Amino acid sequence: MFTQISLALNNFIDDVLDLASDQKNLLILKHKLNLSDSLDKGHWTTNLCLIASNIAKKNPKELAAQLALSLEGIEGIQKVEVAGPGFVNIFLTQPAFLQQAEVGLKLIPDPEQTTKQKIQIEFVSANPTGPLHVGHGRGAAYGDAIGRILEHLGHEVEREYYVNDAGRQIDILACSIFLRKFTCFDEDTFPGSAYKGGYVLDIADSISLDLKAEEINKETLRSKLPEDPEAQIDELITRIQSAHVESWSLIRAQGLAYVIQSIKADLTEFKVNFDHWFFESSLGNLSDNQSEISLAIQKLQKNHTYEKDGAVWLESTKFGDDKDRVIIREDGRGTYLSADLVYHKNKLDRGFSTIINVWGSDHHGYIKRIEATIEAFGYKKQQMQVQLVQFANLFEDGAKVKMSTRSGNFYTLKQLIDDIGPDASRFYYLSKQADQHLDFDIGVARTNSKDNLYYYVQYAHARICSVQKKYVGLGKTLPNAFSDIENFHACDELIQLALNFSFVVHNAGENLHPHLIVYYLRDLAQGFHHFYNDVNILNAEEAEQINIMRSLAVVKDVLGSALELLGIEPLDQM
Image 1 (cartoon, rainbow, N blue to C red):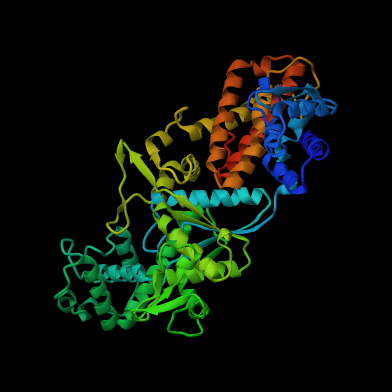
Image 2: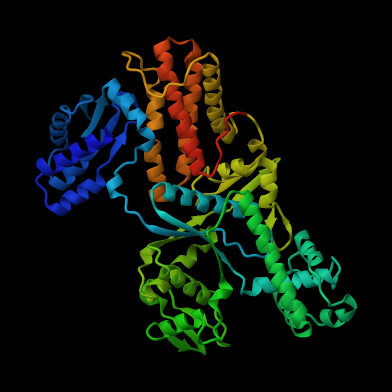
């Protein structure tokens, strides 16, 4: 029925409206055919005539009256009404409505207009300096969910984790492990900029070295250190590196491997799996003229850089940035931007039509400079989409849980998974638009009540499973089609809600908003629970029971499919 109505609307644009081809194309793209939010307004509604009136300079109500006449002849349409300033509401016959419900799960609006893309999503990418904390979990749930939704819509999706393994933070981790392993400081004097979490000691205990504690001159290591915490940790790194070259390299490598493995394990338990782990170190370094980073910078230096004060600057203002950026420091070392710009070139060189970066909200100011580097390499900045994600604020017993990797005082993602499970965690992370603040109360998430939205949705699915089990227990077979009975409309609102699923998914994928599916699940679960309380399901007349059970099967399938798009397993019992 959707296809028939869509075809009729397109024919109306071609046959009735006197428009140029570009205006027709614009109208086809802008007008919407939607399921009505209330059956009082019909089963379908369209704003075609409102949009057309602006383009064709005609009266919207007159256009709506013409469109209504052209639609009334379609089999399965009971009546058509003009509403408001020019909306057209379409009412189906009951058989047509029920037939539509049978194919509802396969219904995706405008399938011909969905251009399949090769898309890469890079998300989480937390520095591998410690376990993932609950703040990282939101980006993990979000990136994975949009990947699932885009795949459902037919796109080719690759998920990538960018490992920052070549920078100063890994040196700080290695230094922290060294200091813990050989008890170079007591708790009161342990460097303020080192990593202090218990996991550092766990890593230290896991590493075997030939180096013995008595071979380390701790007094020399601790003497005359700078007072500034950042300068102090840098000095300690330099001293350890120069005095214990082999041990340093081994600690750095094994410490990095330990953390990465723990991150992978936590993400796997969180149902997040990456197709590719990209290591920053694979880009090489600027001292090697044939490394990927050197060759890329050399390409930029032909047209888009200049030297000033001994540094190399990218002319990023030519591409919309607010100021030019240093990419090579005076001492020849690359900046953070130099590695990032080459990484983005690498991604686009791999043939992705769209790259999606899921970044923390504090990276907002970084967007324009990356867009500038993309254009400097000859790509279009529109090929990159950045989705900013606010960290989640976790509350327990009314108190905000602290999250600080350096201090070691933080609530890990693993703890959250162990506490309320991966599915409830994912659900709440996705329950609000990603760029908005999220206060996450794990006390509520533990309860079995309607205040716990995750429980409320899962209970709807489990409740339908229970009803189906009882129905079969009466010696009946679950119906696989609706019964054509007149004047029975008890299930209509519930069916209409279920039919909206594909439109919600399409909208969620188009706008990269998985929270829309959570909102939809809330509404569908609420619709079902109200239906369950109002309708005597197993005591209805036989013919009515068939349509009731068939409606519940459709709703159960939709609930299950929607949960699975969020990476959540639908529960059959609770």
